Image (cartoon, rainbow, N blue to C red):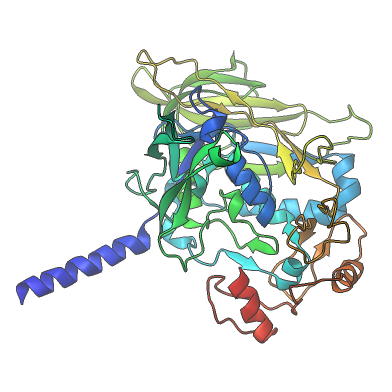
Length: 498
């Protein structure tokens, strides 16, 4: 009897642990061994997955071991828009970006965050009108961009290849692989196979049989009925027609680790800063006095606790009329084994993050069609480990975001498939920028001034349409199989197809 009780208690404890299991992946500059044949950088396999699901983009940087992740050292990051963005997305596009930034501005200080207050299931909801029209949510896309810019990668790096050797055998495409785990629990910081309560396993994919010199460990949920790729930091998880309610628990867990004030790393401050060190207890406050001191200061810095995104006016038509902005703040640091703080002044002469729009279709490369590009740069730490270990870099606050402004796009083959491909299996995914949520308001279609009714008519009149268009219906749990709502049976079909 005692053994049965003990087994039952152990089972309950195991279930409780599984419910709370999770992890995050840290981001930083690629290392020399993180090469294209191991699917780092442009990421052949996952770029194809992204193009077939929604958000298609290459990956800047790569996953890091525990203690090697990069982060921002600037607590105030500015952003703005140039004329190409404003012409295409208009004021509604600006409002969508503002809404994404507000999600991060509303986060608590890292040290005081309670991870239990953040969602693990159902963070991505589906707007069925937007899904039927192949719309990608602008706000949710920007949320992913900012999660990465702050130092996080997603579930496609729970497992990674570190070695791929071609065997000396007459059998072609015979390789041996070494797989590593790059996922860390937000509470214990131990390696983990879970993200937001979902356990992952992997399967090796190799492109050798089709002439592609790339291998990768591809993640799958162990529960085949569970929805994978839940974290906002995972771009592959954002579907056409999907939108995020906020950050997930493990997104916040990663940010908490990176930005808590007692996480010290030898780093540099961002550019355009001067710092004046003085001994005092640490304070997370802004100051108002201008100072003079050391430019491009480096030292043993604590986390900034919170990153605030501030919109600034950017007169891109006139070019040089940006009025410089001066920010004063304090940062924790350690000197001579004593906790101190820096008083920092940073002069901003242009928006740190600039949103623009351009044609991102490469006419010379088949399937080379990106929904966006963004720059990423890192400031290397002045500390060099004698043993050759990787030390954290500083993520530069500056980033240029270029959103595609051409679409929809179709793919045809000669001969035989030359008609409008709506509904055919050879259809290149129709892509439209949009803004939508769970309200009864119709989705907003970009470019600015586009008519949603015209797009709906285009889809409904397409020959060979194989997927019925259902009325919009809210869904509380995207993984549910029997969802009902305003769309009746249509809502269930939409959920099942997610």
